Amino acid sequence: MNDRHRAEGAPGLSPAAPDRGRLFGWTLHGDGRSIGAGAVVAPDERLSWPRTMGIGMQHVVAMFGATLLVPTITGFPVTTTLLFSGIGTVLFLLITRNRVPSYLGSSFAFIAPLTASAGSGIGAQLGGVLVAGAALLLVGLAVKFAGARVIDAVMPPVVTGAVVVLIGLNLAPVATASYEAQPLVATITLVAIVLVTVVGPGMLGRLGILVGVVVGWVFAAVSGGLSEERVAALREADWIGLPTFHAPSFELGVIAVTLPVVIVLVAENVGHVKAVAAMTGRSLDDVAGDALLADGLATTLAGAGGGSGTTTYAENIGVMAATRVYSTAAYWVAAATAIVLAFSPKFGALVFTVPDGVLGGATLVLYGLIGILGVRIWMDAKVDFTDPVNLTVVAAALVAGIGDLTLAIGSVELGGIAWGSVGILVLYPVMRRLARLRRA
Figure (cartoon, rainbow, N blue to C red):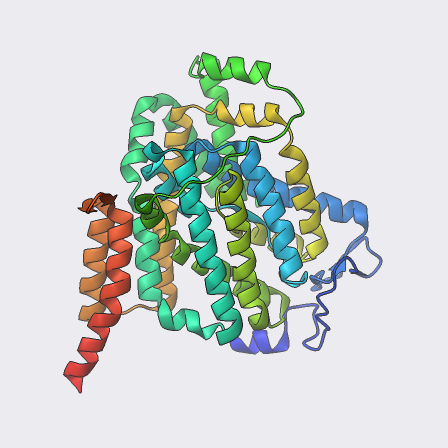
């Protein structure tokens, strides 16, 4: 969207349209039943409640595949992650005063550090999630008081893109190992994901990963590829019950591996706020800090109780673009639905039956998508890789991350994600400063 379009506002929204940010006081859009040609339902508006509930359910479907896949891959309790996802969404809507429509689902960025630190136990893993959430909360406070431009100054696109790439590609061996465990199941899953994503119409195309996982699961069930132990646990699970909670513990090595995820969360969060602002024609710069703060608080709470870290979801932006409904009322419905589902152990046991081959087929795509997201950050920002600073620093960081460079500092062992991220965060500003001094 160009600058002129931003200045004039999105179709159907007057640039002078009030952005009251009220809680539980949405204005009915038109007759509440239809949306006029070129019009959109603004964040502080809603359709009739039955239609709003229907759209809210679509948001649940959109976030389901990714949000549930993260705990499935990392071994975290599914229903607990879903509970904190719903609670996090409620907190986000409250803190941003209903001005930023968004669902907070599980962040793929946490898959890498959680998988790398699996041997330390879920308590230490949760400690890493909690500390990452607290760090993001502090970033939100800094942005709230210093302004959104502080992010670009501290983490320019060349740095952000490199960290995202190495987080995604660091786990490539894990994806291939899962694929090799059940190659036929994995191939069926992968083909289904690719086909649905490429040729699936409308919303179906946006649910390619979820559809592929379901197809792979069905094939595994028919061909005897499901774990009998997990299927037995599914039969015995209660329909209604409390989620499983865990307390965090803190290990320096796990925290060091997890902290670089904050860079990804900041990039995702800021990008989401900018996208919503562009689509609705309303400036949201003054709530950029609140959005980061809310995401940080949601991730901190998840780490304190047993859930995976959260992030704003691009899948739900797709739903808004398709429906032209940006009403935050729909997100309250989505959050409530997720919280209700979290109290079904049967549902969590069903997700836990997904076999290695299905995860291998899905993660072969997912980990690559995370890496490509980093490349996209470079492309959108037109990062110049003929610049020797950009070229050499990023090159070293990527090989350290993708090659999983593992070195110990005393009794603490740090892997490739930590070394690659720290390397570029430290080296880039130093090398950039030296280059400027040389030219001077």
